[in-house]
Length: 401
Ligand code: PMP
Ligand code: GLN
Image 1: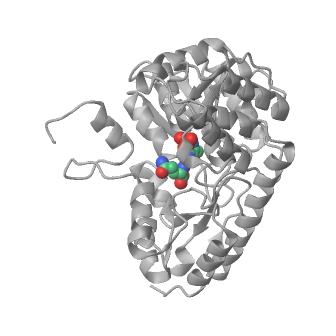
Image 2 (image 1 turned 60 degrees about the vertical axis):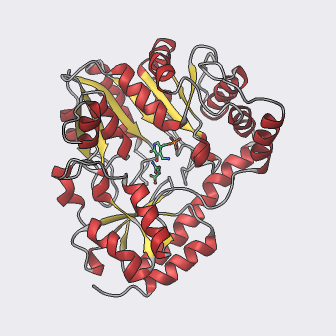
Image 3 (image 1 turned 135 degrees about the horizontal axis):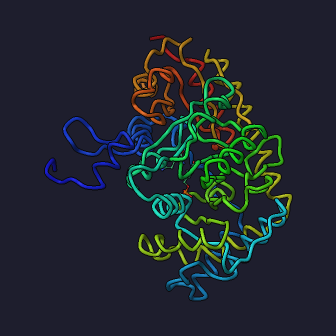
């Protein structure tokens, strides 16, 4: 494989996936789920729920298949789903969108991110500012697009960025400021000050804000504030979300991008050559989901808050130092009190020591910064209460290193 060069190598290196012998290794999520399966450990690693989403949404997908919604959807998505996304943005955030021009349906948030970054980045001199630790596909896509990743650190335990460091990172070379709020892997929700500063810097340096808000309905002490609602932001912001987290349907891979028509059209230009379209029968079903009553959306947040609290109690009892998430599926712990010096090694031993799987935070940072996150581990709370209780019991009996 060594003789093959090109974007795959750049991407794999950017994502930290290229091993010493030049072969790719799976993402940390795939690897840790395989470890959980082979050891019988409770999988609090990869963030996917262990219960299906709301029955009306599942029924609507079955009905769509039965009704023959089984061929290609239009490139932007079915008009009814475009309308449902626009209605959702209006209902929850007061954002007005033209569904025909300012909404695009994608194959999950992952494709939305990939096509957005490929569409906006124009060469090796351009930079993308991200908050570190960051979701793994960000570094991979920035590398694939051939640009430079500029990380701004989020530090234990509150994981809010230092505003001066943020201001230093954004320059006239910055093409995109990539925000993820609520944030994976830390569970933080950015303060209004941070969001304001992102908008100010984007204006000052003529950068585009790309914001990944897949956990928008998992803010524990709501409401969620989309950065696009801040003064002066909408004109230069692309907002990305997905059905996966809100409806507990991560395998459906249906997402969307919203924002100014010219930017959305640029994303469409790339997206149509990545997948063209995806998942036709899921589209009417997600439209049903987006139109569920407010109580559904409120319960998504309150149930996850309760699960995060339960997980936090179990983790504290086991002896970890625990940060308190404000949203998302995730809770980050410091495993140093349990003897960890290398989160990656700790996570590989954890199935043996405690019968539980977590994800090392070092998987979400550039290799040069690993030391600063060396003892931090992410656990996912998006599991049934009895599974979290089982995990807590197992962790309480953790063998000391
Ligand atoms: N962004 C973040 C922050 C995520 O945690 C995930 C994982 N679900 C994604 C994007 C990918 O979303 P999707 O499964 O809709 O592609
Ligand atoms: N978003 C999920 C997580 O952070 C993982 C999705 C994936 O495996 N790519 O756990």
